[in-house]
Length: 172
Image (cartoon, rainbow, N blue to C red; front, side, top):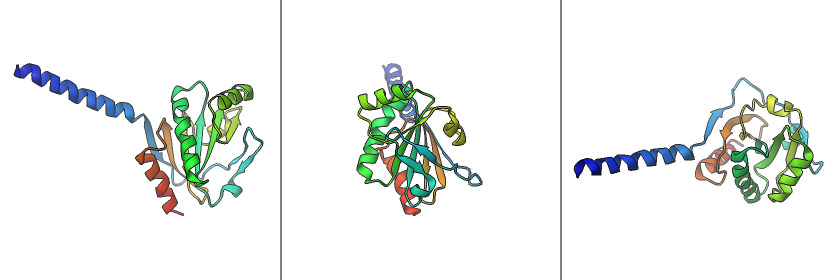
């Protein structure tokens, strides 16, 4: 009896640890202090230009994704909710990497994504920002300097992500 109960309790501990690991599907790292942020010079699907000069003074959440990426699809609604609730601070900009405009447009409209979507047709923008996995998000301070890089999916409405964004607001 005691042995069986111990086994059940251990199984519960293992499941709890596994569940915690499953929720932590991202890795947050500081942007290298000695590395300046790449210049933002891009245009979204609605022909809206986005550039470093116009974004100065605003926090930016720059998200790199692709339509074939399952975690990206899961993350986009929370980025949309962050944008909707933020009143424009932070500015959320998404960058689709190496996919045709027709595919991205169909996906965006089909999933009711209203965020700015930039097409990185060659992957050059992603390369400049050091993107090696999808999704990757870069948090950029009001001074235009990248602060954090998050690789992997994240709930942008969760307390951890909100604390990161609010921490950037305090730096203003």
